[in-house]
Every structure is written in C-alpha cells, then in structure tokens.
Amino acid sequence: RVVELTLPETSTVRDLKTMVLTKFGVPVCGQTLTGWYKAPNSDHTKLSTLKLPRENLLFLTVLDTENNGMDNDRTEDLLTRTYTLNVFDETKCKDYSLKYPGAKTVEEVKADVFSLTDIPVRHQVWSGWPSTLRDDTTTLAAAGLNLPHHSLSVKRNPAKEYKRIIVDLADSDSSVEEFEDASESFTGEDEMFVEDIGSKKLQPLIPDNVEDETAGCLHFADEFTNRYGAIHPDFFPGTLEDAIKEACLRPASERRLLAVYLHHDASVLTNVFCTQLLCFESVLQLLATNFVVWGWDLTYESNRQKFLSSLTRNLGPMAAVTVRNVEVERLPALLLIMRMRSSTEIFTAVHGNVGVNDLLTSLIQAVDVFSEQQKQEVREEQERNAREMIKFEQDKAYQDSLAIDRAKEEAKKQQEMKETQEKLRIETEKQEEEAKKQAERLALESELPDEPEENSSLSITKIRFRLPKGEFLERRFLASNRLQVLLNYLVIQGYHTEDYKVICSWPRRDLTALNVNSTLEQLNLCPQETLILEER
Image 1 (cartoon, rainbow, N blue to C red):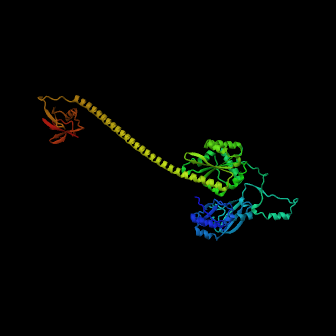
Image 2: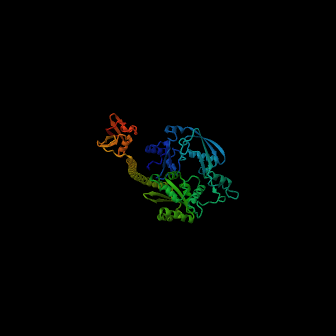
Image 3: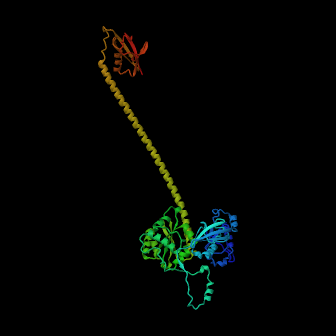
C-alpha cells in the first residue's frame, strides 16, 4: 500500500512519523523508515537537512512489538534505560563494554565501534543483533535487546584486503604542516584505501566456458560473496530450469516471482549496482520475501551463449531476444519473470543505469501486478480443485456402489452355487439311498416266502396294513412265519422299518421294537389282524 504525504521542509522526522501514526495507527516508537537519501540522526532532524528530492519513496517497517514482548508504554520506558553492550572484536580478540541509553541508535553504536576497532562501518560484520532488527536507525529500546547486558561480536569483512597508502613527503614541495592541516578535513569514514591488487587477482564470478550450469551458479554465489561481502541476495543454487520450477511452476498459492541477475565485469555500472543497489536493505527485503533470485555472469561469450540457450529452452526465443538487445553499457540487469495464466514470461528488465528508488519502484510494481494475478489464479485454482474434488467424490461413490453391487452379485452367485451343490448332494445321497433300498428290496423279495393259499391246510393269518395315506394292503402269512417275514414284506412294498412304525392297536405296541424272530402266532396276530403304519 502506497500513501502520499505532503510536509513543509521545516518539518522534522518526528512530524513525519506523527502523520504516519495518523494514517496507519502505527506508534511512533514502533516505526522504522528506510529509503532515505541521507539517514537522519534522530527524530528531531529537519527534513530540509536530508537533501531529499521533491518526491521521495520511503518504506515503513513496523516493529513487531508483540514478539518483542513490549507494548508502547514499555518501549517509551526503555528509552530511558541504560544498555550495556559487551562487544567482542574478533579481528583483534579484544572485549569492549559499552554503556548507552535506550534512545541511542544502532547506527551510532556502529560508528563508536569504528573509533575503537578501526573497522569502518561499511566493513563491519556483526553477530548477536536480534533477528527482528531491520534498520540501523532503530533505537536500542526498539531493537529488542536483552537488559541490562547484551552480547555482540564484530569482525572485518574478509571479502577485500586493504592497505594504507604511505605518502613520502621528503621530495614534496608541500610542508609537513600543510599536510597535517589538510588531514584535518578528513573524517574516520573518509580514510583512503586501495585494493591490494598484487596480493589477490580479481576472480570471475563464473569461469570461462563452464560446462555444468549448476556448478556455474554455485561458483557465482561464492565469488559474489568474496567480492562484495556476505550481505547480498540469496542466489538459487541450481539451473535456470530448476529456478523457474521453484518460483513459477508450483500451485498458485505457493508461486513467487523470479529475479534473474545478469552480471558483466566490463560494465562501469557493475560495482555500483552490486554494492549500492542490489545489496540495499529494502531491496534485499523485497527480494527475500517475494522472489527467487538466480544469478549468471555474461562476461565471457561462452557463458553468455550458454545462458541464451537455456533461456530459449525454458522461456522461448523472444526472451532470448530481449537479453541479446541489452548492451554491455546497460548491464548489469535484473530480469523480473512471472507466471501469468499458463505462460511464464519476462515481465520487465531493470538495467544497471537506475537508482535505488527506480529499482524499488520496479520491484514493487512487479509484486503488485503478480499479487493481483496470484489472487485471481488462487481463487480459480480453489474453484477448480473444488470441482475436481466433487467429481472425485462422485466417481468414488459410484465405484463404491458398483463394488457393493458386484459383491452382492458375487455373494448371490456363491449362494446359488452352494444351494445347487447342496441339492445335488442331497439328490445324490437320495439316489444312493434309494438304490440301496431297491437292492435291499430285491434281495428281500427273492427271500420272501410265497403267499399261502386261502384254503391252505396250514394255519394262516390274514394281515391288513393301513398305510399313512389311508390306503390298505392285505396279505396272508403262515402263522408260523417269523415277524421278520412280515417286516420284510413291508420293506418290499416301500415301507422300511427305519422310516415307519408298525402299530398293533390292541394291545398297542410297535412291532418293529419286538423280537423279529417271534412267530406271528406267538405275537397273537392270528387269525387276522389290522396293523397301522406310522411315519417316524
């Protein structure tokens, strides 16, 4: 969000922060403003002393007071507290104990450390400051330091070695007094240094004719650190194709912009761009939050052609044409790449002949366009995922229903098969049983004595059998025939004693339970008798 504020030149930084409080509701003590042409020493500094252009782009960083465990009243109280900073100089292995009020800024502390350690602020590498600290104009009260003691360490940036120029005035026309008078016009920060070129040759960011793109990128990041220091964008350690996948070819909600930094040592703009623009704090914050940064060195023609081939392969020939048309005098360049709809394209190219404000404006514009497009694509992706989820659930429900129907059909077939097999088994057993009984009937029939004549001289008895269905059988037997003969006759007729009882009504008895060797006469079944067949 960008808000335009208009103030007279006589206003102070405090007046500006008061207007920010009115607009955004951010307490003055929780505001950190960056992007100054010349950083103010305190909130009482007048804007007219900061050499600001008529239109100036500043960036507001809100101190995370909740994470620091402080509310506004607490911050105001800390401004009056005394902080003891235990600073360890790693270069000289020396400790310093410095006491400051809470209103002291980090920038002022670093300047004091320079006077003690002889390490200029621009070459100081610190450790121990809170991770929430984003700007050197922040006061110690707002920096989130430990009370009453906080430990820090500092060392000289090892990227470059310097040696002091010693001027021999023996043959000079100038007097010693004149030289001493001239030296009074220099401050500690203005000391003159030259790079010890003889001790260390400048190494290319990427060696000539590098074969492996990933190895070239890793070498680029290492040499960039050696040349310009540890404070720089976090370069992606992989090929351009992998960087595009990491930034652009992800779900819409996870996408980021891709910033491709193209370096060239032959350009006079390179050193200024790397040291003053690319490593500027607000630029670093924007890049770290919204971009994947990938770097390549175009100094050697072989590496330039390798990059153009990779760019053509991943983004098409028009992207390569854009890079070919960039003259060496306008390098380095920052290509801002984003994915819009279904294509990945170069959104804009920022050349090396721009200032910090122009670079920040280009980055912010790209982020705004990308964010708006991302919101729409996230919404469309969510709707598409919702439709696909509904379709998936419907297909799954259909497949589940189909599986249930198939299981039922299979169970029905299995049941029918079991029933068929059971019927077949029963039928088979029945047939076997019937065959067995038939064989038994035939055997008994061959052994059964003939029925005696009615006028036979032998003692006979007439037996009448009442069948279960009400029908009757009648046969004559010799009174001397055993009971077994009578029962065999019934078996031959199809009434096996295993299935039927043979009941004599008076006295009631089951003949099948009696001794089968008893004669009919002994059983009082003479001269006639009616027997009843009952199913068991």
